[in-house]
Each structure stands twice: as structure tokens, then as C-alpha cells.
Image (tube, rainbow, N blue to C red; front, side, top):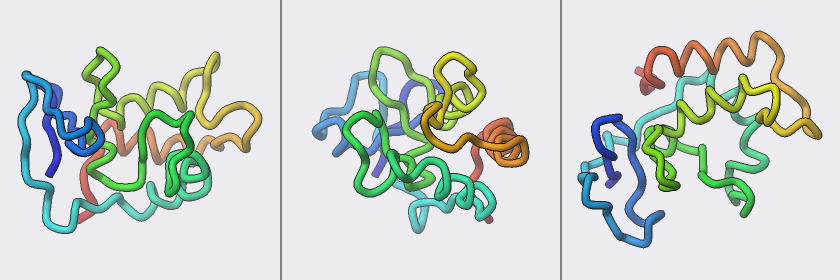
Length: 126
């Protein structure tokens, strides 16, 4: 199960919110298999993101990015922006980039892979 947030198409696993579903959200069934992240995107995530946003997720990382449903999710902090869009913003942010400055950075090819996926709405792999 996941929770679609408002009209932005985002989602959140209800267990992440302590089982509480905000009034403007609806619970939906997850796609069969939970949805699949495309292989080329997954390759970039494994190298640059899963050290903090993987399993186990570090406390400083506000959301897991292990599954396609995680990317469709909304981190409830007053904004209803899907996690895939939050990722796009942060990987292109020169002031507060992701990955953090102290870690190896995305090269242009890797950033392009993630940006193109997000521009298409972060679709599941076929």
C-alpha cells in the first residue's frame, strides 16, 4: 500500500507516517512487484545514494530511495513534492547538493540519467 498525496501524484508508505493518512491523501495498492526502478537509474543510485538513503537508511536522510514507490512518495514536511522531484532539485543544487560535497559527486552522465528519468515523471521500468 502507498498513499497518494493531493493532486501531485506523490506517495508515502502509510507505515512511514505511523499508519496515519493525512486528510488530503488516499491509500492505493502498490503496483505488482512494488514497481521497478530502471536499471540505468538504479546503477547511479547504488553508487551515489544508497549509502545514506538505502538499507539501513541513515537518520539524517529524510526518506528511503530504495524502491520505485519510495520515489513516488511525499516526505511530509509541509510540502507535497514527490521524492523524485526533491531528488532532481538537490542533485542540481550548487548550494546544498546531493550527494553532499564530502562524498563523490555525480558526473554529467549520471546527473543526466537521473534528470531525464525525473523529467519523464520517474516511470517504472517496463
